[in-house]
Length: 213
Ligand SMILES: [Zn+2]
Image (cartoon, rainbow, N blue to C red; front, side):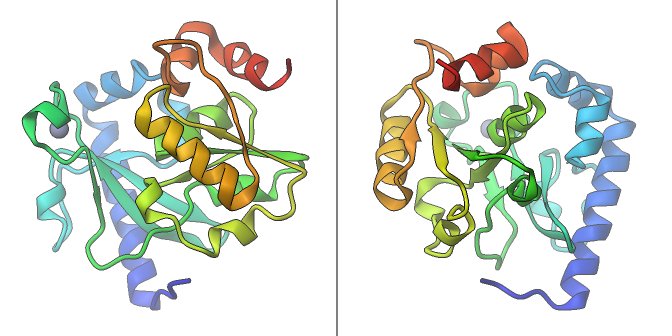
Protein backbone atom coordinates (compact mmCIF):
# COMPACT_ATOMS: atom_id res chain seq x y z
CA UNK A 1 0.00 0.00 0.00
CA UNK A 2 1.32 3.47 -0.77
CA UNK A 3 2.32 5.68 2.13
CA UNK A 4 1.88 9.39 1.71
CA UNK A 5 4.10 12.07 3.14
CA UNK A 6 2.38 14.69 5.25
CA UNK A 7 2.97 17.17 2.41
CA UNK A 8 1.10 14.89 -0.01
CA UNK A 9 -1.80 14.54 2.43
CA UNK A 10 -1.94 18.28 2.89
CA UNK A 11 -1.86 18.76 -0.87
CA UNK A 12 -4.84 16.43 -1.43
CA UNK A 13 -6.71 18.14 1.41
CA UNK A 14 -6.12 21.56 -0.12
CA UNK A 15 -7.08 20.23 -3.56
CA UNK A 16 -10.32 18.71 -2.24
CA UNK A 17 -11.34 21.94 -0.46
CA UNK A 18 -10.39 24.15 -3.41
CA UNK A 19 -12.32 22.08 -5.97
CA UNK A 20 -15.34 21.74 -3.65
CA UNK A 21 -15.40 25.54 -3.39
CA UNK A 22 -15.13 25.73 -7.20
CA UNK A 23 -18.13 23.41 -7.48
CA UNK A 24 -20.15 25.55 -5.08
CA UNK A 25 -19.74 28.43 -7.55
CA UNK A 26 -20.38 26.39 -10.71
CA UNK A 27 -23.99 25.81 -11.66
CA UNK A 28 -23.22 23.78 -14.80
CA UNK A 29 -21.16 21.22 -12.85
CA UNK A 30 -23.88 21.20 -10.18
CA UNK A 31 -26.46 20.44 -12.87
CA UNK A 32 -24.33 17.60 -14.17
CA UNK A 33 -24.22 16.05 -10.71
CA UNK A 34 -27.93 16.62 -10.07
CA UNK A 35 -28.65 14.73 -13.28
CA UNK A 36 -26.86 11.80 -11.66
CA UNK A 37 -28.69 12.01 -8.37
CA UNK A 38 -26.05 13.95 -6.45
CA UNK A 39 -27.62 17.00 -4.82
CA UNK A 40 -25.62 19.54 -2.85
CA UNK A 41 -25.64 17.45 0.28
CA UNK A 42 -24.44 14.32 -1.55
CA UNK A 43 -21.69 16.32 -3.25
CA UNK A 44 -20.62 17.57 0.19
CA UNK A 45 -20.66 14.05 1.69
CA UNK A 46 -18.30 12.75 -0.99
CA UNK A 47 -16.45 16.09 -1.17
CA UNK A 48 -16.91 16.21 -4.93
CA UNK A 49 -15.50 19.19 -6.73
CA UNK A 50 -14.72 20.67 -10.09
CA UNK A 51 -11.26 21.80 -11.16
CA UNK A 52 -11.62 25.49 -12.03
CA UNK A 53 -8.58 26.77 -10.15
CA UNK A 54 -6.11 23.90 -10.60
CA UNK A 55 -3.38 23.57 -8.00
CA UNK A 56 0.17 23.48 -9.35
CA UNK A 57 0.58 20.13 -11.11
CA UNK A 58 -3.17 19.76 -11.68
CA UNK A 59 -3.44 21.98 -14.76
CA UNK A 60 -4.14 19.03 -17.04
CA UNK A 61 -7.26 18.21 -14.97
CA UNK A 62 -8.85 21.63 -15.52
CA UNK A 63 -12.59 21.44 -16.15
CA UNK A 64 -12.90 17.92 -14.75
CA UNK A 65 -14.91 16.56 -11.86
CA UNK A 66 -12.61 15.96 -8.87
CA UNK A 67 -13.32 12.82 -6.88
CA UNK A 68 -11.32 12.64 -3.64
CA UNK A 69 -10.49 9.34 -1.99
CA UNK A 70 -11.51 9.94 1.60
CA UNK A 71 -10.23 7.69 4.38
CA UNK A 72 -10.40 7.86 8.19
CA UNK A 73 -7.04 9.67 8.02
CA UNK A 74 -8.05 12.19 5.39
CA UNK A 75 -7.88 12.47 1.60
CA UNK A 76 -5.25 10.13 0.15
CA UNK A 77 -5.86 10.22 -3.59
CA UNK A 78 -8.00 11.83 -6.23
CA UNK A 79 -9.32 11.00 -9.68
CA UNK A 80 -10.68 13.30 -12.33
CA UNK A 81 -13.67 12.58 -14.53
CA UNK A 82 -14.43 14.25 -17.84
CA UNK A 83 -17.47 16.56 -17.72
CA UNK A 84 -17.62 17.04 -21.49
CA UNK A 85 -21.01 16.70 -23.18
CA UNK A 86 -19.68 14.06 -25.56
CA UNK A 87 -19.01 10.35 -25.86
CA UNK A 88 -15.45 10.21 -24.45
CA UNK A 89 -14.63 6.97 -26.26
CA UNK A 90 -15.71 8.36 -29.63
CA UNK A 91 -13.72 11.55 -29.01
CA UNK A 92 -10.60 9.66 -27.91
CA UNK A 93 -10.89 11.49 -24.59
CA UNK A 94 -9.79 9.75 -21.38
CA UNK A 95 -12.97 9.60 -19.28
CA UNK A 96 -10.95 9.31 -16.09
CA UNK A 97 -7.50 10.57 -15.21
CA UNK A 98 -5.58 9.47 -12.13
CA UNK A 99 -3.42 11.81 -10.10
CA UNK A 100 0.13 11.64 -11.49
CA UNK A 101 2.49 9.33 -9.68
CA UNK A 102 -0.16 7.70 -7.53
CA UNK A 103 -0.98 4.01 -7.20
CA UNK A 104 -4.64 3.08 -7.15
CA UNK A 105 -6.68 2.84 -3.97
CA UNK A 106 -10.09 1.47 -3.17
CA UNK A 107 -12.67 4.23 -3.25
CA UNK A 108 -15.07 4.98 -0.37
CA UNK A 109 -13.26 2.85 2.23
CA UNK A 110 -15.28 4.57 4.97
CA UNK A 111 -18.04 2.10 4.02
CA UNK A 112 -15.80 -0.82 5.07
CA UNK A 113 -16.45 0.31 8.65
CA UNK A 114 -20.23 0.29 8.33
CA UNK A 115 -22.04 -2.43 10.26
CA UNK A 116 -23.10 -4.70 7.41
CA UNK A 117 -22.83 -8.41 6.59
CA UNK A 118 -22.25 -7.53 2.93
CA UNK A 119 -20.30 -5.07 0.83
CA UNK A 120 -20.87 -4.01 -2.77
CA UNK A 121 -18.02 -3.47 -5.23
CA UNK A 122 -18.34 -1.36 -8.36
CA UNK A 123 -16.10 -0.41 -11.22
CA UNK A 124 -15.80 3.35 -10.82
CA UNK A 125 -16.22 5.85 -8.04
CA UNK A 126 -19.61 7.38 -8.80
CA UNK A 127 -21.38 4.01 -8.89
CA UNK A 128 -19.93 3.20 -5.46
CA UNK A 129 -21.09 6.55 -4.11
CA UNK A 130 -24.52 5.94 -5.65
CA UNK A 131 -24.95 2.58 -3.92
CA UNK A 132 -23.69 4.08 -0.69
CA UNK A 133 -26.28 6.86 -0.92
CA UNK A 134 -28.91 4.18 -1.46
CA UNK A 135 -27.94 2.63 1.87
CA UNK A 136 -25.88 -0.20 0.37
CA UNK A 137 -22.29 -0.08 1.66
CA UNK A 138 -20.00 0.02 -1.36
CA UNK A 139 -16.42 0.50 -2.44
CA UNK A 140 -15.21 1.31 -5.94
CA UNK A 141 -12.32 -0.08 -7.95
CA UNK A 142 -10.81 2.43 -10.37
CA UNK A 143 -10.87 -0.02 -13.27
CA UNK A 144 -10.17 -3.75 -13.28
CA UNK A 145 -6.65 -3.12 -14.60
CA UNK A 146 -5.96 -1.13 -11.41
CA UNK A 147 -6.86 -3.97 -9.02
CA UNK A 148 -4.28 -4.45 -6.28
CA UNK A 149 -3.71 -7.71 -4.41
CA UNK A 150 -4.28 -6.09 -1.01
CA UNK A 151 -7.81 -4.97 -1.96
CA UNK A 152 -8.92 -8.58 -1.31
CA UNK A 153 -7.91 -8.30 2.34
CA UNK A 154 -10.08 -5.23 2.84
CA UNK A 155 -13.11 -7.29 1.81
CA UNK A 156 -12.28 -10.36 3.92
CA UNK A 157 -14.59 -9.54 6.82
CA UNK A 158 -17.82 -9.57 4.83
CA UNK A 159 -20.05 -12.63 4.51
CA UNK A 160 -21.11 -11.63 1.02
CA UNK A 161 -19.49 -9.48 -1.63
CA UNK A 162 -21.75 -8.26 -4.42
CA UNK A 163 -20.20 -6.98 -7.61
CA UNK A 164 -22.09 -4.46 -9.73
CA UNK A 165 -20.65 -4.35 -13.23
CA UNK A 166 -22.22 -2.57 -16.18
CA UNK A 167 -24.34 -4.86 -18.37
CA UNK A 168 -21.76 -4.89 -21.14
CA UNK A 169 -18.65 -6.89 -22.02
CA UNK A 170 -16.35 -4.87 -19.75
CA UNK A 171 -18.84 -5.13 -16.89
CA UNK A 172 -19.15 -8.89 -17.24
CA UNK A 173 -15.38 -9.17 -17.32
CA UNK A 174 -15.21 -7.17 -14.09
CA UNK A 175 -17.82 -9.45 -12.49
CA UNK A 176 -15.95 -12.58 -13.49
CA UNK A 177 -12.68 -11.16 -12.30
CA UNK A 178 -14.07 -10.40 -8.84
CA UNK A 179 -15.87 -13.73 -8.64
CA UNK A 180 -12.46 -15.32 -9.06
CA UNK A 181 -10.46 -12.92 -6.85
CA UNK A 182 -12.79 -12.57 -3.87
CA UNK A 183 -15.69 -15.00 -4.50
CA UNK A 184 -17.96 -12.07 -5.30
CA UNK A 185 -21.52 -12.61 -6.50
CA UNK A 186 -22.23 -10.69 -9.71
CA UNK A 187 -25.47 -8.69 -9.53
CA UNK A 188 -27.47 -8.50 -12.75
CA UNK A 189 -28.70 -5.07 -13.71
CA UNK A 190 -31.78 -4.58 -15.89
CA UNK A 191 -31.00 -4.32 -19.62
CA UNK A 192 -29.70 -0.91 -20.61
CA UNK A 193 -29.21 0.34 -17.04
CA UNK A 194 -26.17 0.96 -14.90
CA UNK A 195 -26.13 1.54 -11.15
CA UNK A 196 -26.48 5.27 -11.52
CA UNK A 197 -29.17 5.32 -14.18
CA UNK A 198 -31.26 2.84 -12.20
CA UNK A 199 -30.90 4.98 -9.08
CA UNK A 200 -32.01 8.08 -10.98
CA UNK A 201 -35.06 6.25 -12.34
CA UNK A 202 -36.16 4.15 -9.39
CA UNK A 203 -34.31 5.54 -6.38
CA UNK A 204 -32.73 3.54 -3.60
CA UNK A 205 -35.40 0.81 -3.79
CA UNK A 206 -34.49 0.03 -7.41
CA UNK A 207 -30.97 -0.85 -6.26
CA UNK A 208 -31.86 -2.54 -2.97
CA UNK A 209 -34.28 -4.83 -4.77
CA UNK A 210 -31.42 -6.28 -6.84
CA UNK A 211 -29.79 -7.91 -3.84
CA UNK A 212 -32.87 -8.64 -1.73
CA UNK A 213 -34.59 -11.09 -4.03
ZN1 LIG B 1 -14.52 13.24 -22.38
